[in-house]
Image (cartoon, rainbow, N blue to C red):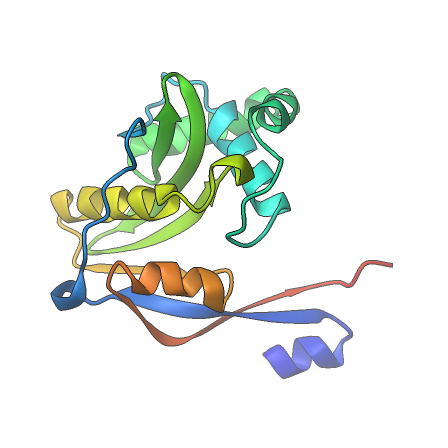
Length: 187
């Protein structure tokens, strides 16, 4: 499929596809002053979506200047219907969202999508001003623990790149293949 997409002029990206090896699992605790908790449909769901947008607009693991101000700007752009969709998924148990907070301020987010005994961890992102502190690993570990409480046996994810994959390896994930994505190049 990747060759066909590339042949059609699309930009093809490959990401490490990783599965948690329970025998290799290593807990990650939140850094001091950080609380990780599950969000509910009663929370302001514009915030986790905006946080992910800011985090992924600045790919990688390096710290940077985008922080709470960028989050506030992005949250103002999230449409109520988008937040409502996420709220309905949370209420039905189709998506589980965890966020990391400094006081009342969100600084990281991630989710998992349980289906039977399998779940995918997705959208783990940290505001660039809070990166390189262990928050992303702590959110991922929190989601893994939530999945286990729900009876999930297989936890997988697709890392953004090999550098990000090393963070997940530190938690006990191992690469089992490649996940692909394709997009039209910018004109």
